[in-house]
Length: 116
Image 1: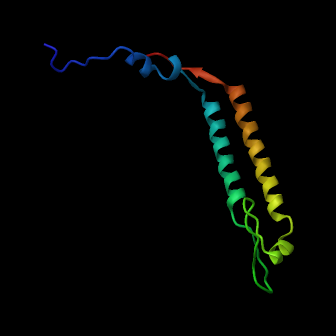
Image 2: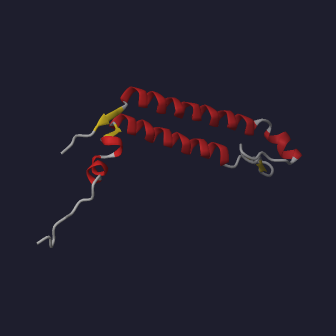
Image 3: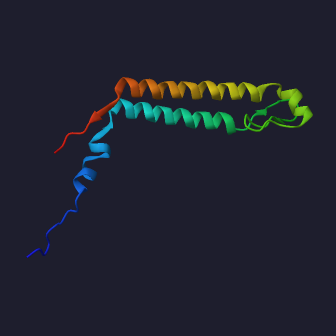
């Protein structure tokens, strides 16, 4: 009787071994991927966070963001090149994240899963 027996379809064993026959990223590579994702979050913050010039004696000036600088002439005069500087900061952090990702994957690579 086959009641209660587990029947596996052909090819299930390849799926259970992992991607592509058992290859996976090593622990060091996964840490570098995590760091690269963290830097991507920082880049998004730098690009989309609002820039505001706080003034103690008068009103605050909204300078827009790095993605969308202000169009107001007073704000442009008060803020100067702040949005451009923020774009350069975001680009520098993005380059650092790509460097961490590429060098981490090159250094740690992938590891072979053990077949149990």
